[in-house]
Length: 177
Image (tube, rainbow, N blue to C red; front, side):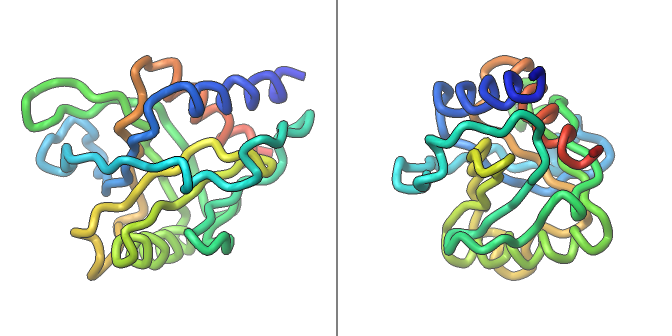
């Protein structure tokens, strides 16, 4: 029951907050402002598909990262952790974000998926049990290589740390099952 409530809360947070998020590479020092760009890209309503009105099941069991064509490019087996954190932007201000760490195989898949998204100026959509929980865009600067290194940061829409925590809880509840 708690996971279902958490999934519903995550869905509401995503829908009620600004939908401008982005994926950027991460390093082990999330406070290093040089490792993260501060530009964000808006995500329009058409980026959300028909699954956005579905309610999550009682126990989170499926995590999927999908490309703009709706193809699954990563799943729970490709993600090690999701951690709520902060990084310092180029102005010295803390920015709330979610740090994703991928398995070795997941890192390769993620690099390919983000390269495609950067070239096409689209997003990588993250679903938990068929419910869209995040749709971060990928900056065009990653069109040559994608986001490499096995880590990435989702930032741009979080106004409260609890929103990043809720997204991480939803993702981690699936990968730790």
